[in-house]
Length: 232
Image 1 (cartoon, rainbow, N blue to C red):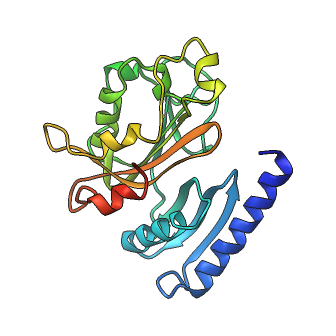
Image 2 (image 1 turned 180 degrees about the vertical axis):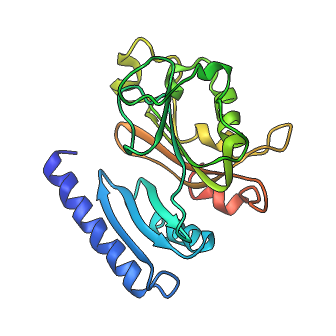
């Protein structure tokens, strides 16, 4: 998609989101702002409680054409704690906590993620794993760590190159191929009962996007109807 069309799509999605906020009685009156960049919804502002934020994420994710919902919303006045794992030289927001193996201007904590994530259980609200999984021969241990450190209702945001795009194979450091269907396995309970609930799993012509909630503390695994929204 060329830049002009991408911008037009973003403006159309912003209009749809504004209409949703104005007319959906569950969202009307929320002090939030939504803008789109590359069909990813970016949400800022305040909501009274976690339930309102969950409804907001769900309704925005149901708009046709939305690839992901990334929010930096205060809940009852509390700013979310957000982590960028394997951030390298780019964090998704300047205030995120950046972890990486190598030092750099965006890296706040040096960490070998193959040995685990040096954060406490249920201590963060969101985790970004952007163009990381494809570099790992086995990424399941890292995803288990993400599940561990996320609070109930928290969100894991994953971006990875779609396996059929040249970017997936052009980089010799890429070790794994990723598809939307890859995440179906992760949304089924493993041997310990651990799994993810899919908020949104999509792709465009080059990238796979996944917004996943850890299924714990009242968040139950997705049923077949929910899985059918995203997976064959």
